[in-house]
Image (tube, helix red, strand yellow):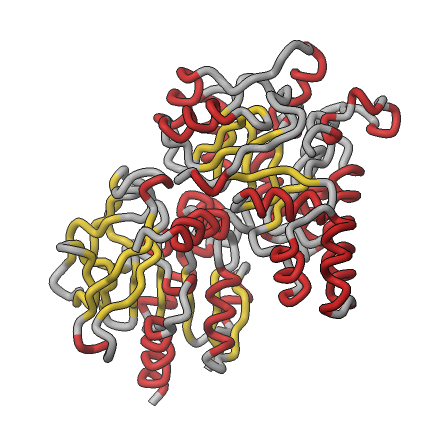
Length: 193
Length: 295
């Protein structure tokens, strides 16, 4: 398995470090040619407007969308969730691959960023909580019928799955707990079988 | 979970999110929109860009409140703003305004000629400039969540940013070859906190993200900073003092992502008009150099 990390802007290096710790072959994706060689993809945290802008020259947005529609497993964190969502508030272009609505910076500006405990469903195993690093995080305000909630902060879904797409509004890549990344790795292994 | 450790983690976390990005100086809402549309990862709201501060002179202070709120209301990306070195109250006011990052900056006229702000006591993260490793570690010791080179702001000359990036890198490498018994003496020479010195010696990098600033005027300048180990770049006068701000901003954003791909840099740079004319740093007097401010 070869996992790509979209390395246009953001904390892609932190994701790559987690994947390497898990023993996964990892490569950075900046062009359409890079994308062609990967079996799974991480959309990191960062600024969604910057990432979407940087996808334009190679028409990378459409190429990623095609691969994901054809089953490419994806892990998206924070800005990555905004990039994948079907609708965003305030409205901006997105890949519309994950049937959720998100509100950008919904918890406020940076002074409201925080570390908070996310309550997990059984699927992620013990312990039943995971440390959630929320940085100017988006809020998922609606989930479609095909979307399963795997983790909540209070009432808000913050970790969800839809088919091969796993999406977290927080940053598991900034902690030592690699269970969210392992979901992606297991997804790809299952897919390859 | 609001421990002081977690508070610092979310500050550094935002700096992590800005990596691979461009932070652009803007002086009004129109420029902020141009920056966001170009793909900037954040904007720095200020009254005058450094090149104008140089020409016009006078005391340079924190931007007007209206200016900052105007810029905050028109973009979704993080908004930073500058305070004078050591100006604790400007910092508290920017925190109350909920700017996303404070730059305690040598570009403004210093408020204190001995002390910087104690930054751990704030919820808002700070970035500070440095010319070498010792200065970087003093600022981190005070609580800075991001370090940038000072370079020479408003000059359009990359030479100082290169000097500072290389100095930090050389300082880190030097710590790596010292044994543990030599680190206290080295901390004394650097004028840096011992704990920070030890951390860098063990990890071979700064404990917070390390960005470049000061004199970046072209996509090639930005890519050069990335080549020398910067993790993102600040561009001040280089965009809005050029003949073609919007395409230049876009080109610099692209160059920071594709800095390793020379063929792509050629395409990115093709067709750009004149860069800012600039001032050769070698011809400035010591008093004219903004990078000499800070202690």
